Length: 331
Image (cartoon, rainbow, N blue to C red; front, side, top):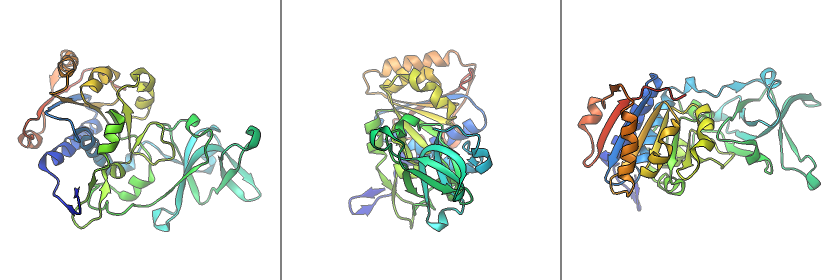
């Protein structure tokens, strides 16, 4: 991790939380519905590292990503107004860009077969400029969440460099071209959004590689920040769980991380993902109430699920872990 003008080795406790997040995602891959409760002396960075570990695990199986790419014939049936990401077929080595915006249609005009993305409305509300993308050079990816059409209604399309940002070769286990090519909701993190995003600015690096922030590595984004490539998203613990529960479930995240006692109390019943990791700081005024919520869940659970031996042996000082299998379906 970056410290002033130099670098410092990542502490063992930080590596443990990342590994715990990876294990949670692995449980989800195997269809295990589980709750993992972690009691910590202080919750700083714990949830962000857990989320990073789960996203990293998902990158190992990127070929099973839930967001397929659509060709021209398939795009004919796509409803106008959907949020889409237009991807160059040739891949990141060409240095091309990906574009995100509102789909207007798959049509044939004087330029041949093209995809149309709507631009900003013109004066008086008239249709604005339209971007045409040759269908033989691009494919579409539908963004079902967290992108909403209203987030793009008064904006131009967004563009991004479609390439490995550099420095990730030793930090993500999966295929980097697939990881950067696709948007999928691998993990959702519920907490104080401003705090989570601030902690995600921590810069880390593998040996002999340049540094990147945790946010860049796991492509963490807020709910209403359109045009951003994402693999994880942060929700405010103060939001209404009923407003987002169905939207999150539709994204099929492998892991939901509840950051802090307040998030556990408010969001535990929402069942956002197959595996929920609840982080409770013992110093929180609502820690006891959050523990009661967790144990109420445990009473409905028929079978214990223990931590893997490696994680159990390396449990950081002051951290208490309890894991159990959840009987109910979460999706």
